[in-house]
Length: 120
Image (cartoon, rainbow, N blue to C red; front, side, top):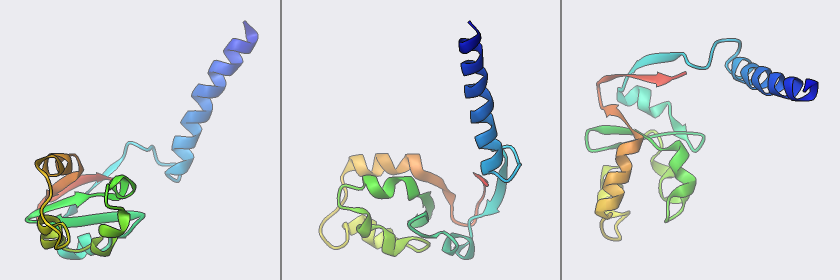
């Protein structure tokens, strides 16, 4: 019984500590408001932090890069930039499927120039 309690306590306490330490002592649930200007979007220009513009919408695609069927190298040149033409023409090779358009919705941050809340 004692081992079970220690194990449960360790799992709860340690996972809570990781979340607290990873955010510099600030609880992980805090968010910040940002205006999706082109300057703000340009700050997210690396594979580790990738936002792209498609049409008038901004997408946070960092977690999708390694899932992209054509490879992450198809998206990374557009991190922090407008990827509308590249997306609509599949980089000049055709057009994306209806499924790709549906899938993009889960990465939507908001419209360009809108104020949104994002995790810190």
